[in-house]
Length: 240
Image 1 (tube, rainbow, N blue to C red):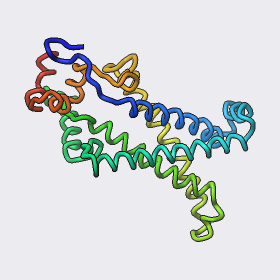
Image 2: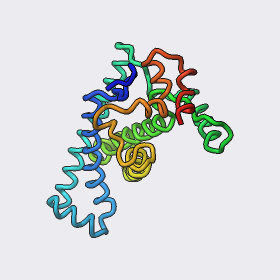
Image 3: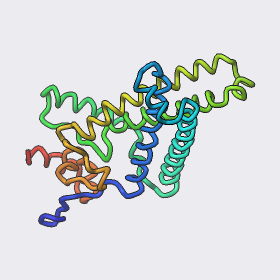
Image 4: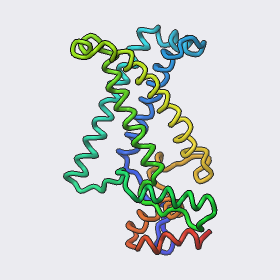
């Protein structure tokens, strides 16, 4: 769709990224259901789920298989991203840099009414980057501690036995923290935020409107349209 030569809808995600997102989301939901039902076993909902899934041994097996799958998904994500950056000259768009910190300060000034323009962000803004790295590092921690809990005897063969209760505390608490981050922060930004309500369809179709790109990712839009970011960052202000 075009309007006076300007695309109304802009492709933001390819099919592989969409598929990866939903597979990870499904795997995460299985891990949350089987993990939290073990952590909070005294609740009736947990006991109901354990019974429906065939007992605690079945729940543990499903949790471990899902953990293996998440490990594979995480490793392939890291390998593909690293290969793309190192050998295919992909832009390292998720690397946190100085501009992300200045953008957060600029947005704070905008929210307080000290400036009349929000931060001019690139493909991913500072909030998305902080969420991404928080979840990724948390998942890596859960993978490491999960394997320690799965194979305690080999681990304690060369590490102190105190590593087991420490790994259990880290695994369960980090899992709960990531669940809360996704349930509160990510779900809000994807569904309940006034900018996307009732649903952010970008991760479903791969496309977002040019108006939204102009509002949220003007630097990337300027690069796509061959414009200067200084020029396009002011367009949304003039169109409001």
